[in-house]
Amino acid sequence: MVYWMRKGAGVDRYAFESRVRYSECDQTGRLSLVSMVNYLQDCSTFQSEELDRGFASLREHGIAWILANWRIELGELPALGEKIVISTWCYEMTRSHALRCFSITNEDGVDVVRADSQWFVFDTKAGHVSRVPDDQRVYLSDRPRADMAPLNRRMRAEGGGSPCAPFLVRSHHLDTNNHMNNAQYVLLAHDALEELGCSQRLGCVSVLYRKMALLGDVIAPVVYRHEGGWDVDLTDGEGATYALVRFDARQEEA
Image 1 (cartoon, helix red, strand yellow):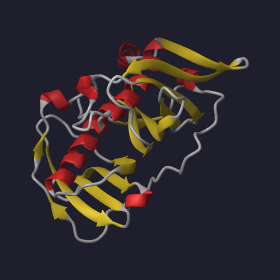
Image 2 (cartoon, helix red, strand yellow; image 1 turned 60 degrees about the vertical axis):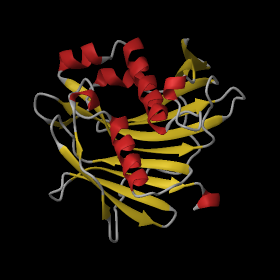
Image 3 (cartoon, rainbow, N blue to C red; image 1 turned 90 degrees about the horizontal axis):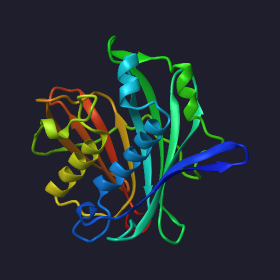
Image 4 (cartoon, helix red, strand yellow; image 1 turned 180 degrees about the vertical axis):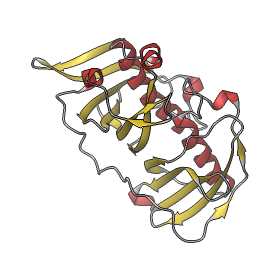
């Protein structure tokens, strides 16, 4: 079920209901990290389609919304078969960007995921970021920002890093914008941690996207240990970064 949540005369947030599928679970029987990220992306995509601002409309106007960074705070992720509600709302929109929150709520009404994110409009013909068109203000909600720590827009990996096996971008990693889907960067970074034997229960995932990974690109992950977790720099092997992914362990395990 997909529906709008309203507060007074204004729109509060957009949400849809789901149930955790077996194909979305990790080896513990709970919602996997990449499936969780996909749920957040799906929610904003569904909202766009409902507002007639989806892929067809964006393509017609030669623009696309691109994700610049986000912060995802994690509780105990839902288990197989558990009913969940995924929500999103845009709490700020200027001529230059949009800020959008997300949540995943369990059967007890508890937010097990809270996320904040920053988005830009990309001119697909000119190949650069452009001003936000007036008709995109339809997303703007009356709901305030979620109660969570601020976005980290200046993350930097420091110290000595450990290189991991390179990764080739294939067609099944791409989305409709023909670059690697946002969730795949998180999955690849998490795989790099596993390659090095880094075990953790995550309390937060932050991502800073810097360069679009395209079909045939080779991504070379480098893992850095920081106080409380790990940074994974997804590089092109020649000094540039596709994305920097920060994993913070839960406080009791940091």
